[in-house]
Length: 90
Image (cartoon, rainbow, N blue to C red; front, side, top):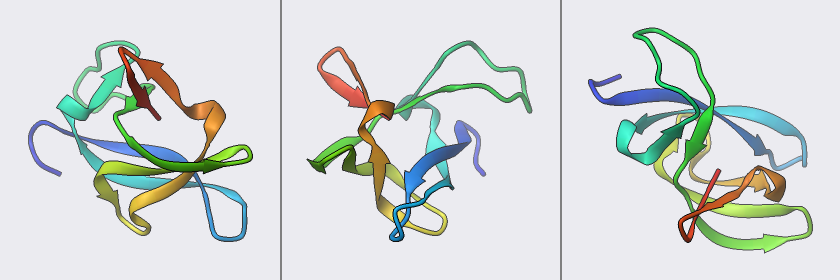
């Protein structure tokens, strides 16, 4: 992990349709935190994403940096997406 990055744990849908967690190192400029973090702290927030498409309750999104196991494109539950200033965040 580099200075200015956070280890983000993202709720995704795997190829079996199961909800799992995926990890990615995300630049701090691509994350909106619910509150400021202290060094080593844990918090909640949103990652800026680009939506590729949606079907049913799920959406395919492109993350700003790839997850460690799934790459940059993941499927998420649409209920985890939030529009912010015209941008949808996950």
